Image (cartoon, rainbow, N blue to C red; front, side, top):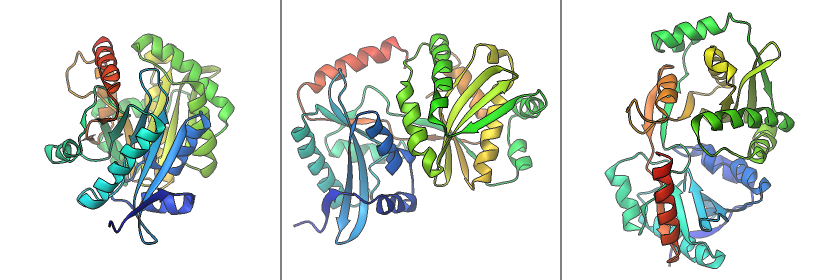
Length: 340
């Protein structure tokens, strides 16, 4: 008989204290990420691995009812001791039974574990296979900001530092808000960005949900940069634990020939510092340094702010139904068509 018991966690304080106390915290396993998904109509399971009255691990599980196949997502988690095979085996046995009960075809997991062979073996042992698609940002760029502004600037690429300083003298205004109605600004800008870079954008409701949940707890801000009456760019920054995350962003066509993007980033970094964040996570970058990669320009821009690359283990899938083969074939084809 196992010394652990798995049951849903109902207490927000208990959940958040555990996530904040973990070696690697992630807003993707936060209480409010669950709330954000609930607000857009998804079902969420907050599973806790208990040893007596003590919480030993958590897994925020999101049920996706996608056309390509219903499935469970566990982004940035589970958060547990991966060397404890008893708790790991118990959790995934529980998840497989829950998946069958909920009628999902597969379970997709992208934990905050570094991308190496040792961690890959954990999932192969559990019966997982490498996913044809990524789950959230797997290749990230992180800037340490636990230092003075002058030191942060000195760590930047020379050109980036020059453009950051230049942008502060060009007359931009920054708005910082938690008003969910203002997310329409970001959504409208995203339409322009989607057209330029040919990707699938996010619905406005997910932007609203993040400000309604993280925002009310002081964990998110929508930044909007203007030049006079012209809106240049916008971004949602999540502040969670030691990190600030440059999560969603978009820019206008007009801003491409300006330094507005440098201005917004510097304002966000200064806000993160003021809140006590130790790191500024610029979110996704290209997997390689190939100059022909579709995200090469964005990657070059982000790296200019100094910092280091962190590669998380690629998403892995645990097939539950034979129908998963349909999803795998569809996503593999889509990956090729989108040059991902």
